[in-house]
Length: 186
Image (cartoon, rainbow, N blue to C red; front, side, top):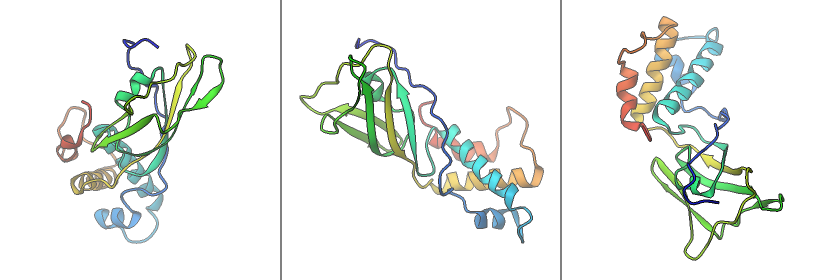
């Protein structure tokens, strides 16, 4: 692979986490809801609030496994998601077309807060991959969001519940104020 190839991660397929960072009980308290009539709507608002906060900040605020694909090992210098808890596997196709799993003895995960990279260990070299093939990274991502991000999610949920609509495009909201300091790679 050429060292000067452009970085290119392909879109990561969204995965719904097993546990949302905001519970249904927390959402009910925030929206002053008693009973179960609004549970389905609140579940939707909870998932939407998390997805919006994650997209806005460029960070995963719920633990789950994600799979991403790129063209070159050079792309590993900045992963498309963070925080990364661990790498499950890195697979690639060697020049003969056979799929291989990259040995964990060749690389290390550098997960410094909201930035994550996979780098070679000293003395190691990236293997040669079949031209036109993709490298696949499977990793465990996500963290408990900071209090202000949780607050922003609760505001989003309450706004969605109360108004069933959001501020017009271009307006700066409390949600934006709370999330702006957690944006990654903007």
